[in-house]
Image (cartoon, rainbow, N blue to C red; front, side, top):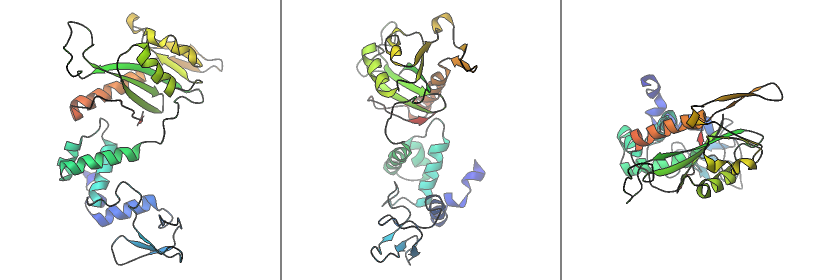
Length: 273
C-alpha cells in the first residue's frame, strides 16, 4: 500500500493530469465540443488545449465532462480518492476521506457522491438475462426510528432486500417488511423471466418463483446450505444462497465499521459482486 501511494500521480497535479489524459485520451486529445480526435494543441495555461478545427477553436481540458469539472480540489487528490474508494472493499466514509486527503468534510462528501455517481452502471435493466443465476435474501440492520425493541423478533429493525447475480452485480433495496406484498414487486421488477432464481425457504418467494425459468430453495431451517444437481448438458448446478450471504457480510461490516449511519430510504445500489 505504501509503495502504491508513493506514486507521483497521488502527490502532483501534473502527474495526475497526465495519468487521466492517458486513460481518457489514449489516441490523443478529444475535443468535448466537436468530438474531433487528436487535432488540438496545448496552450500556455497548464493542462489546457485548443481545438484546431476551424469551426470550433474552443479551449478544453481533460476534466471537462467529468465529475472533476470546475472543481477547485487539487487533481491529485481526486485521483487518490478514486483509488481509495475502489480499493476499500467495505467502502470509505466521507469523514475518513476528509481526514486522509486533508480537505474539508463538505468537500469530501461532495467527492464521494460524485465518484459513486460516476461508478454507477447506467440503468437498472433486469438481472439474470440469458439464464443467469439470481440469489435473493433479506437482512435486518439498524433500528427503525421511534419503534421500541420487542421481546423477540426483528420488528424494530430495518429490512434490506438484496438480489445478487452470480459473477455479476448486486442490488439492494430498503423494504418495509419481509411480507410478499413488499418483496415480490421488487423481485418482479428487477429479475429477468429467463433467470434461475435461488432463495431460502421463505414462503414469500413461493409464488413469485413461478415467474422464472426455475426456482430452487435451500432449507436453512434443516441445516441445508447447498445442494448439487446435474444439468441436462452434464454440468453441475449448485443451489445455494452463499453469494448473497457473503454480500451481507461485507455490507454489514461496512455499515457498522465504516459508515455507522445510513438514511432510511430506498437503496438502489448496483455494485460489483
